[in-house]
Image 1: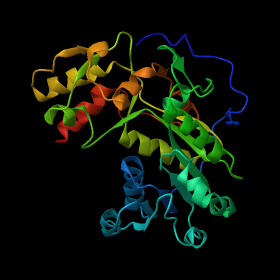
Image 2 (image 1 turned 30 degrees about the horizontal axis):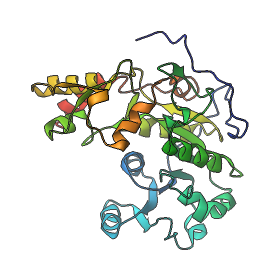
Image 3 (image 1 turned 90 degrees about the horizontal axis):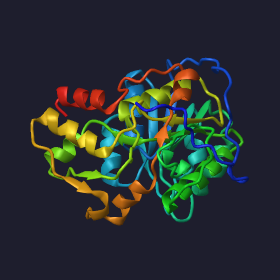
Length: 317
């Protein structure tokens, strides 16, 4: 791994909102029981939800389709339909008894759908012990491969990153500010380089010096639980593993595990990529994760993509 001596440190924009800079580990809270409400029961939120259900917690939340609503209810999760044009009916009453609230709904062109539809009701729920918002490391923008941490300025290089930054500001503006979790590229069971290789979708696109940070979905759930146990409202956390790496290396290792020949290397300049796929290469940075370790006492179960992919392979994923 390269030295961390070079950190992307520029002058911050004056209107970015204030993120708390923790100096010591917060007091611990018991997680023996509770009620989690999740706006957006997707891959990451559902991984946390299932872990808490197994511990005896009550879990409720939202999804966008009646089909998924039925599937969630079959798993013991009280699910409500929600999108920007379909708010949750009487949310304030549904939040009575809720101890923790997590939002994983991405922003759209008009802003953050959850804050826009229900920010007032969430603000009035002063009994909440913890509020979390799932953001992305895209808020830092491009640092030409340098290391970034939570004190680095946020200069998103594209529209998606700017939307995330504005959403973070909205969640920080609550009377009890949310905890921000800036997630790297997520992988896990059913969604990893192993699956893209098996499906014939894997490509080894190479752009000189380009690296990406990643995080196993199980480690995301563990970080969220660790933060719930040590609430520190308004704090931002980078959630990533210890080894930012070129994407082609990940595909090559997945092929080694599966015993197949890797796809040919394609130069980025000549790769046939969609505008969305190409936009991911606009940002190049290495993301530091010291805060989740120092403040939350967290240890990664999957500190790099090799450990993570090998674990998935061994488990049959």
